[in-house]
Length: 349
Ligand SMILES: C[S@@+](CC[C@H](N)C(=O)[O-])C[C@H]1O[C@@H](n2cnc3c(N)ncnc32)[C@H](O)[C@@H]1O
Image 1: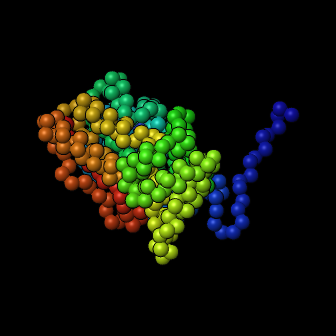
Image 2: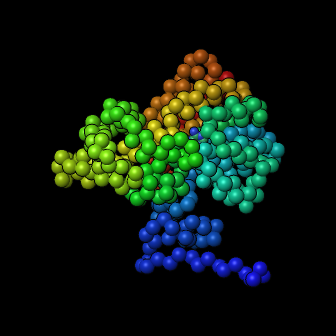
Image 3: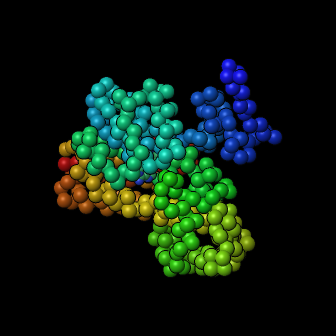
C-alpha cells in the first residue's frame, strides 16, 4: 500500500466555454503553466485570476533610480511584480526588504519569487504591517529607497472567501490579515448608526450614508445577521429603492463600491497605519534616499501629499512631487485598475 502512487487530482471541469466561478479558473490560477491563456486574458484588458498586474512600473523605476548595491524596501509586496523589477536594478550586491500583512498571499509570492531565482540572498520578506518600518530600518540600516503601492491586490479582490468584492458572494470579512482583528460583519454588529454614518462619509464620501446606515442598523436591531457580501449588497439595494429606475442600477453599484471600501478601510485601520508610516518615513531614509507612494483613494493621496509637503517645508525632504504622476492612457487601456492611480514622490534632504 505504501508504495502506491498518490492519486492525481483531476482538475475542475466547467460546462460551457468560460469559467464561472473563481475555483474553475484553473488555467489562470496556474499562470506559469498556461502562459498563452494568461497572455490572452491580459490582451483583453483583464487581470487573470490569482495574479496582480503592477501599476506605473516604468514611472516608479525612473523616479527611484535604483543602483546596484542599494538597499530598499517594498512596503507592499503583493504579487511581487514591483519587487522583481526593483531587484533587477539593485543587483549585484543590493538587497530588497519586502513587507505585507497578508498571510494567505505572502507565502505564494515568496515561493513564486524563489522559483524565479530571487531567494533570501536578495529579498528578505516579512509578514508585517508597514507601519513598523522602523523595525526594518533597525535591522537593515537607513534605506536608499522605499515603495508603497497602497490598497488591495487583484488576488485579494478576486478571492470570494475574503469578502472584498460585492460582485461575488462570500463572508463579509474584508481583513487584509484574516488571522487578526475583527471582520466587517463583526464590526457592523456593534456599531451605532452615527458611527456607521461617520465611517461611510469619512472613508468614502458616501452621499447616501444616512439612509444606508439606517437600513443596516435597523436590520441588526431586528436580529438579522449581516454576514455575507450579498446580504450587505441587498440592504444597500433596498435602501436606494427611492432612486429613479433609470439611474438606480448604476447608483447602487457605485454605493456598493464606496460602502465596501469604507468598511475595508475601517476594518484594517488603513488611514491610521498610513499616517504612522508617513511619520516614520523621513527617519528611515538615507540623505538623498527616495520614496514613491502609489495610492488609489483620495483620502490616501491627501495624506501622502500633506505629509510630503509638511516635511518639505521643515527641510527634511529636499524635493517633493508638486503634482501626482498618473498612468499613461496606454496603461489604462490595457489595465483599467490603473485609472485611479496617483504616484507621489519625495527625496530626503
Ligand atoms: C496593490 S497591492 C501591491 C501589489 C504589488 N506592488 C505588486 O506589484 O504585486 C497592495 C498590497 O499591500 C498589502 N498591504 C496593504 N496595507 C498594508 C500594510 N499596512 N502593511 C503591509 N502590507 C499592506 C496588501 O495586503 C496587498 O498585498
